[in-house]
Image (cartoon, rainbow, N blue to C red; front, top):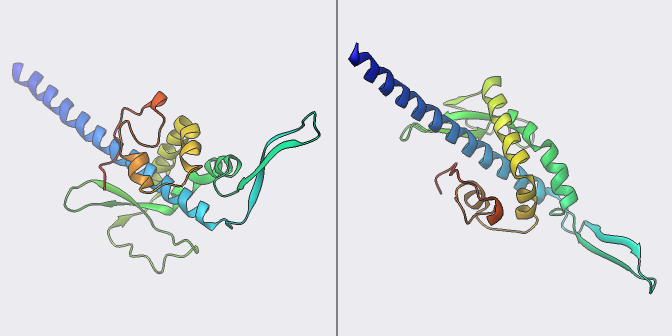
Length: 186
């Protein structure tokens, strides 16, 4: 009977490691998909479009402290995007990397609504996958909404790596450092 205890312990460790890797792959995929979708939507906005920000109170001298900022990266636009962006996870499927056996999440519906130009070979598409990816996306948005808005309000390079891969010096503010490293830097 002593051998069964070690076997159970070994099985528990193996299952825990497998679950942790699946969770890491899922959060990495959700983070990367979230960044892709936000970048796509920001790029679609007319760069000339602006929104007024600031106080609408009238100062004693009769002036107002209002400034115009580009709409694409405004807090109002980013907040609006974050409210609906995770619904797009239904447009993603799961693909297993043959060399690492890690799960990747890839867009299976083209931006124009069709899938004719995409290679869907080896990609699993079902409601369980899109549902868990959507839940992971919503969890990230819920926990890091302020940091996401702060980060996307400024233009940046390598957004996916900065947001999804860095442990402490990425896009999230130092006051709420993310302890988890979801993705390996690309």
